[in-house]
Image (cartoon, rainbow, N blue to C red):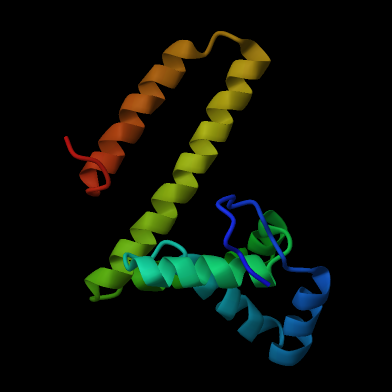
Length: 142
């Protein structure tokens, strides 16, 4: 299998992969592995991000369902990394959290605009807030 396509939505994982992981590793260890793999997709090192994304695509068939399954473990890892003295762990954790928040905000704004049609002012305020957050954590230049 290969994940050389540019589309991030391409997946090769199957439900069989998930059940095999569960039977071999057990639920707790599988959740820790998948949560760590998900966090590694936001690592500061390019090769780590690429490898994590490749493995994620091969193993995971449905990202939202998998994240829902490992959410409590993912939050435990994120909180542990935020409290870590290691700057690399804190940076990866901030990246995971910021990316997740951006996705939630963008989806929320889009749904609100589609449903109500008059949320342009809110969209502009959220865009400014989002830009300030990204600048604060060094993801954008001022």
